[in-house]
Image (cartoon, rainbow, N blue to C red; front, side, top):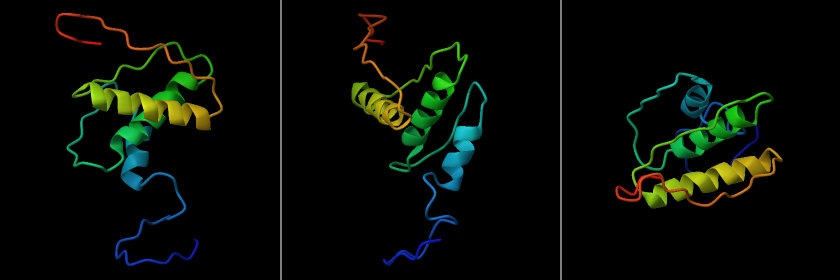
Length: 108
């Protein structure tokens, strides 16, 4: 464990880990439907993006990931997180652009 400076009173069990324990548990949960009561800015979208990339990058993976988002901005931020993780995983990620499935309801 590395020595860190700062005023934080609550430190994670492993300060060198990428994910906090609740994020790791979320990533490891392979249920088809996952629900969580959350607050803002806790890294849940970030860890979900990692889990999505990890599952779709696995050898023999046969399915895409579908994620519902509250608005276009949040959806775009999630895609950016996925691109970041794909780059870290040294994968060639191709931006296919926005695909609108229902023009009238603006569902994409």
